[in-house]
Amino acid sequence: MLYKVQYNPTVAENILHAFRELHARKIWHGDVREENILVRSDNTVVVIDFEWSEINAQPDKLEAEMEEVKTLLIWWKLSR
View 1 (cartoon, rainbow, N blue to C red):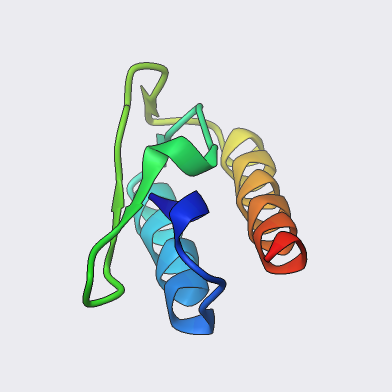
View 2 (spheres, rainbow, N blue to C red):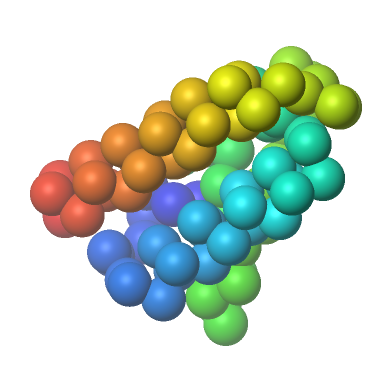
């Protein structure tokens, strides 16, 4: 899980990439938090828990979620 991993720019970029991919498909995750982001030993990222997700989400909702992702990454970098 993200909170057990030291800050790593590669992982941070992979997290951004994962959410960019979701948003390119108009999928809103809806529960951006460290517990819902798993990091494999090769630094690939798996986003889990799509209970609150929405398909065909509006662009403003996707943009707001991306801001949440960026805030999470800033917090992660500063707290480690």
